[in-house]
Image (cartoon, rainbow, N blue to C red):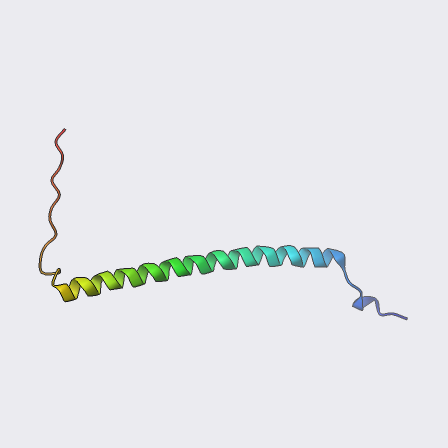
Length: 69
């Protein structure tokens, strides 16, 4: 006699497929956000390093003139 616990369950299979798709989408969004944040951190640190080594920190930035209406 065949063991009924070894048979496939189509409802469980569909539920697991849907859960896997949902978690895959969430994982890809989280990975994309982590990539964006790390790229922003690297860009900002590069700007700070260049500003430090070129001496741009000693010169204050120019003030913008307000446009008269």
